[in-house]
Image (tube, rainbow, N blue to C red):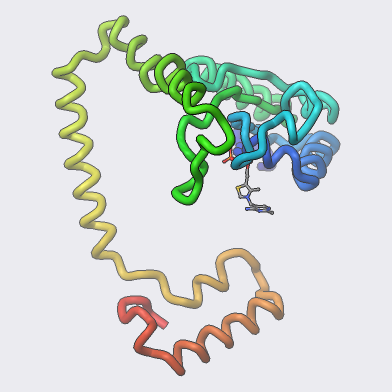
Length: 220
Ligand SMILES: Cc1ncc(C[n+]2csc(CCOP(=O)(O)OP(=O)(O)O)c2C)c(N)n1
């Protein structure tokens, strides 16, 4: 980042803010004056654990303040509020060379994953309310419609245009050669540590023993 007009943004959930690494990261960022935007999506749950069972602080914004980091809370379902907050946060991070924390208050209107049934730990009515009354996409749509920037004709043209672009991109991507197996091991470290070297030997040995189970379009 030295002398560059740049900063980093990291995204995490309320559950992430309940882990030790989060606290170490905030402290390091604060004392080292790292130009980082910590963006927390506080959707009220870490899978099924509500925030009331995770922490007693007033949300996540106060955790940033406790480490001497300027922190702001926004309505995470208001796209313009989120845009404005991140825009300002970036300016501060880049010009002042300091970290910023943004807490976006929101709600997970779907299940955590395909193996989750969130009605087991929260009322279906609550989920419906957020879907109906607070959906950020509907809110943003209403705003751009009111401004006269979107109507059903513009929308359908836009959708069919984008669909074509996506299909073309998929066709191009599918023709690309798959990355070779060695890339699995060279992606993170400059010098591969011993445990990764062992894993590479082990996977190559497994492929040698069971070639029929290894995809033919992935170079070795
Ligand atoms: C180190 C570690 N511990 C536990 C898990 C299991 N896990 C996956 S998602 C999750 C909850 C994350 O909660 P949050 O950060 O609020 O994200 P969200 O549920 O909003 O996606 C947990 C505990 C994990 N992936 N990694």
